[in-house]
Image 1: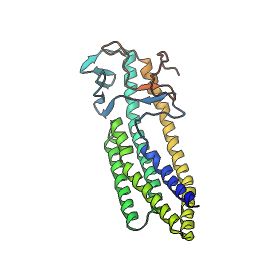
Image 2: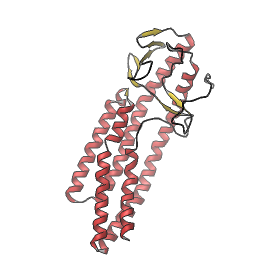
Image 3: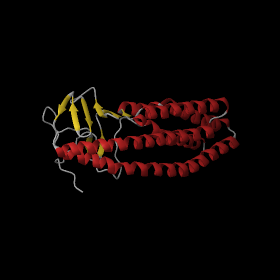
Image 4: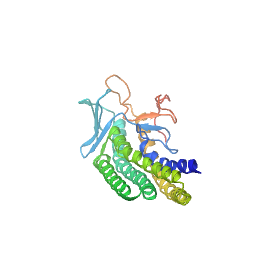
Length: 275
C-alpha cells in the first residue's frame, strides 16, 4: 500500500506536468498535416514585409513583400507567377502568426492549470502559497514572452522553446518534490487515515483532471489541426515556385519532412500544387 501510494501520487504530477517540459525543438505536424513542418529561420512580420534571417546557413537573409524578393541584400528578379506565389505566401504567414500565438497561449494556460491543480491537492501551508505564487509568476512570464514574440509578429524557434520549456522546468522539479514528500510522509507515518486521505485525493485529482484536460486538450488539438491546411498550402506554394538562390538551389523558407522523419529532408520530386 505504501509503495502504491508513493508511485501513484508521483505519477499524477509527472503525467500532468511533463508535456510542458518536453520541447527540445519546434516543428509542427498533426494528423491533418501532409508532412512535418519547421523553419531554419527566425521570422519577423512587419507592415513592410516578411524578414527571414538566421545565423548559420545560406541564404542568411530573405525579405519578401508584395511579390518582390531580396536575398542577402540583393534584389532577385522573379516571374509573374512566382511573384503571385510569393505574395500568397506572405499573406499566408501573416494569417498564421496570430493563430499560432493564440494556440501557444492556451497551451501554456493548460499546462500551468494542471500544475496548479496538483499543487492545490498535495502541497500544504507555506509551501503551497509559495508554489502557487511561483506558478502564477512563471505563467505570466511565459504569456508575456509569447505576446512580445510571436504575438507581435516575431517568430524564433529558440525563443519559443525557452518559453515553453524553460518557464516551467524548475516548477516541475519542485512540484514533483512536493508530491513525493507528501506521499512519503504519509506512507511512513503509520497513520492509515493519512494514507487513505492522500490516496483519495490522488484518485479524485486523477479523475477530475482526466475530464478537464481531455476536454481542453481536444479543443486545442482541433485548433492545431485547423492550422495544418494553411501550412499545407504554404508548402505547396514553396514546392511550386521556380525561385532560385545564388547557388541555383530552390528557395526554401520552410523545411518539409515526411511524417515520422526527423533526420531526412523530403525526397519527393518537386511539383506544382494542385487543387
